[in-house]
Image (tube, rainbow, N blue to C red; front, side, top):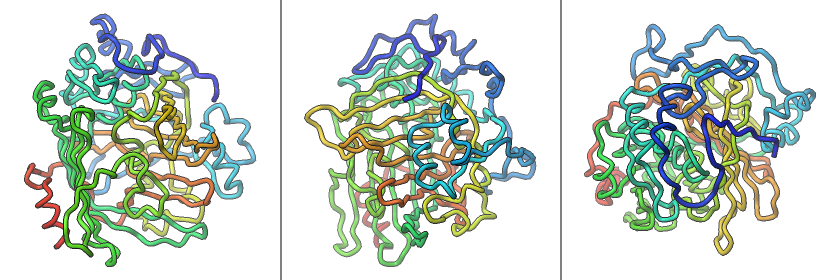
Length: 453
């Protein structure tokens, strides 16, 4: 891995393992000074190619109405330069090992169009306020497999170790509840694919304005997620329900599935770790969803530092309803003409499989956007220490919340020369972040009802 620079303003120790002492009030005060409320460096980088953060996107473009696909707030930005296999050496310091491997695997077609950096990430003020409170109260428990003393905001804006950093990703703000349509495609090496449609609901008690940390610890629920397959016909009605917990030692993740052939709900304790994802052709694991989710207990987590990296950002063109799925899904990788890359600072977190545990991924390296705690890229290694997969999240700011979140996640399998694209929504209705959801909609009985419809 390339040389990484630890920024003294943002981190004081690099450790792996369990909880450390809470940060001091003096360190937390930096969140209202030299750091953003989420712990990013507020200032520009040395040459100004990464600008200072000035609050991100604070209003939607003229004409936008919630429910629309989000228009590009930077429509006049032009490509500054393009990275290709031919000029790759010039930009390797700004790329991950996995990104470099994609250029080597697809030398004639893969490229990165790089645009002006726009630090567009923004969140509601109450989320910033909660983050500042969390900074001196949140702590890891159960050797890092649980968390307490935090609610609503980022728990560890000044992370002391890799576990704290990955919990920041898991608990990043994505609104309080939402419903969404969309789907995924896992094309063959030749580019043929079947679209798998989903209808999903997500309720996030942790993110509810005014949520109390002690009450969250008592209920032990982080979020509730329900997914129903809507197409193709042979899979329609298959459904999944997940209750994610704050302390996964006290109560592990609870999951249920509904199978249309059996017409019954079953507990699904294996919906975790490296079990195959829903209808994924084995191209992603369950804990790949959302770039990483679930219990972190099978890995040792190390905070490596920060680096500047070219990552997808402000990918509104890729998100646009003017595109069809056929415009995006191509052989080998998605169409690079629709992808916007920018230079951003990222936290680097390395996860190594613990002795005596199993997972098809021996090592994972996560590159996490400093402004949002969204994992932007992950390099994944197999048990022979070879690069196996590369995950990429294409993010935008959803103005109506606001929140920075991925619009599409792509996992490249380097051995099969295939990929899976998750979150395709160009031809569907847009997310509804105003949805009013109830606990009664996230029960096994409700799952059975939804599956039969």
